[in-house]
Length: 262
Length: 62
Image (cartoon, rainbow over all chains, first blue to last red; front, side, top):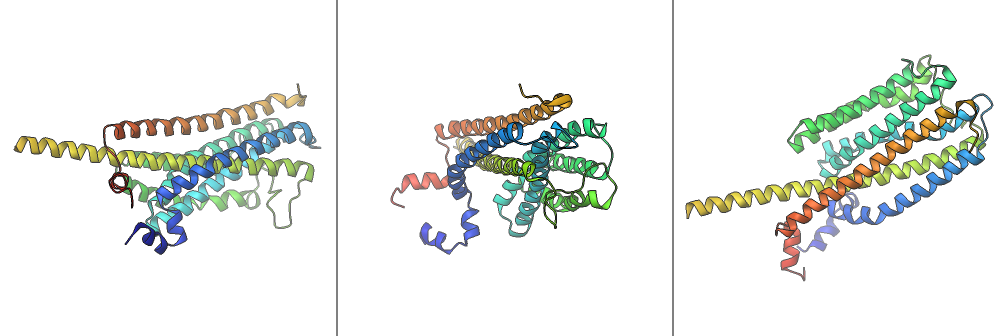
């Protein structure tokens, strides 16, 4: 059977999930993703600082919304990506799913931290405090700790396959935090405002503020995917390096054993 | 300079934290990738390479 016969028998998912094919595809796509992300983020900054009007209640502090809201969305999307990847790894046992989960954790953690930090800086002038232990803020903080837990668990377990499985279980269990974050503003009394963009009855935010927010969200989402692709490429190379190093050590041991026997 | 009103410091601080964290993330990923590639290059220079690549070098027609 030739390699092309093997390839033709694979499903589309299997072909895309092949690490070598992923390296080729991501190598081509990543510069375009990064370029589009940079262009959209710059455009969003222009809209935020030179086009978008002040909010009638919040004044110029509404400019923080253009970075705070995308960070919060991406913090949750990052964890959803980890949960989907974890499911793929536990059910289909594909190592690339584990690579995806591992690569998404630090990026998701960074966006969660940014959502908390920018929210805090927005909260002080608007609410009079940097922090309150209300449902939305606390559930976002738990999400940050979940990300830290995933990163710490993976580095604590030396066996890579076992670490992958343990992180996948934690990743799936932890996904329960996402609906809690999303609906926390509806279920409990909080200082945080209710959803104003993703709502069943449509956005309640004025289009002059909504448009820069959406451009910013798309730009930072593309950046997230570019960073995730880069993280996955690094992890694939790291695993290659590890297996080559082990092979070299085994070969050296074999050679020294043969020399001792001879 | 853009006039951001009485809460300008909070707005600039939020954007500055964003820039620093994202620049750090990008820098770390690029540095990490370059470091691993350099280590892989060292191994390959010593003649250690992946079986698939070694096989394709031995049989260029396949």
